Image (cartoon, rainbow, N blue to C red; front, side):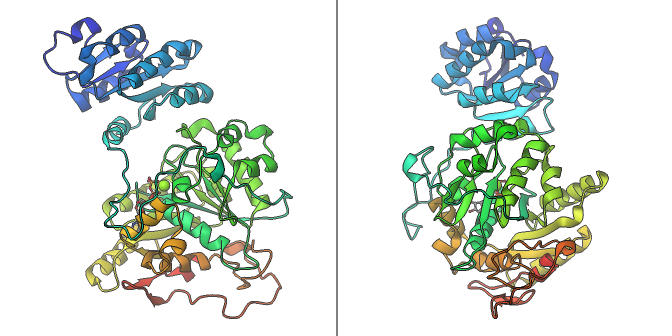
Length: 475
Ligand SMILES: Nc1ncnc2c1ncn2[C@@H]1O[C@H](COP(=O)(O)OP(=O)(O)OP(=O)(O)O)[C@@H](O)[C@H]1O
Ligand SMILES: [Mg+2]
């Protein structure tokens, strides 16, 4: 670590800098920077940073880690200048924030910081942030491989793409809450959530339940991308003041996909997950429950203060995993944490994504062993749907609209069907019976014949058989 004066004679290229009022307030950051970069980093104060970023030596910088704490909130202008200067020189910015209020944080993130890490730094968080900013910007699949041309990324706040919910909030529903939580990065949680929501919203032509999808992954939420919806500013307004928001405000912040599925996208700017309190999230979910029959929640991977709030309202809490060690370890850790807090871990419904094909017997037995050793039941298995799944996501279309025959879609579709009212009445206008065992009750309306699919059976998909085991999910 060196000061500005010391940076220049150092022969080793400086790859990164911390910028703060006093870096000694961020000792963990110093440790992590040393672990990540050895000697190839420097430290600057805010004033020095403004000078240094304009010099040719700054060209070697891969990123700056701007560390701010509550005291800096009084004078954000200096920090905003530094972020602007870094952006002007195409230097990536990681924001490290200690006890900074959500409004100030939002202001700083809006200026274009690539990533945000809270302080004290969680284990490996800086490393992960550095890895993320090294990733090249996402690219769409090559046209030759795609049957259809890939869609351009959805423009932010493009007015013509907006479609507002058509009904008035009456608070006349008591929806089933189905959160989806990925236990490992990229394991398919958002894809599952989006397609499950669409499946439920289109389950019947004339009498489909009212379904909303709420993307609570404020940083990397991709429901907007997967449904090609713009991200509205109103979402931030709602999140930053849920106290004065009512059901109408919630509906106004939502968009509709194909006039059927209501979506509260993640905000347009990357926000810290603790911008909302458990009470805020409780209010949002309660308002959604009061106006929809199904509330699908795409959860962030990180466990936050309000994870408990969502879990406690969930009728079934889908935990997405893959057949690998990280998923297995994360299942153990999550269940241990929930048990330690006395939280209802039995609401977890495990979904194995990219499950092995029926013919891969050794992998099938690995699935069995994994479930046994974790002492869980894997309720739904979804096969690898290949490039079609990602292409559908990139096109902003649910799989049923883009690739209805895809094995992932076929299997997922069955898992969605299991969360129709347990009475079997698919046309029941009150499609709000809980899938929680204790809340089940028949609706009294006549059950529609042939409406339910067979459950818990092996079924032939286009690429192979898939086992949904979905009867267990509903049981
Ligand atoms: N069964 C599948 N077959 C093929 N591709 C899949 C499958 N499930 C997910 N994908 C692809 O994997 C990628 C990650 O999926 P997704 O965004 O749903 O994961 P996630 O768990 O929500 O990730 P994150 O941790 O970023 O929230 C996407 O490109 C998606 O298209
Ligand atoms: Mg996701």
